[in-house]
Amino acid sequence: MKKLDQTKIEYLVSLLQRLEYGSLLITVHANEITQVEIKEKTRIAKTGTVK
Image (cartoon, rainbow, N blue to C red; front, side, top):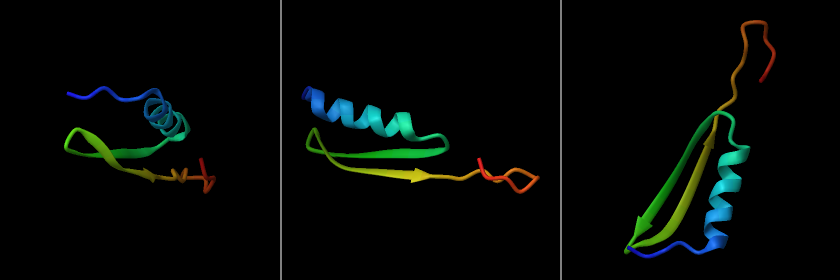
């Protein structure tokens, strides 16, 4: 198993910190991160306000 460098770790953490609702998908090939997808969701309250 290959170790992640600090830059990649910081990038992934920054994506997680800004994500309130949604998912983060990390694709790995041959022990390397090759792709990162982030899906954000918006919650709409019954009163019509967006959170």
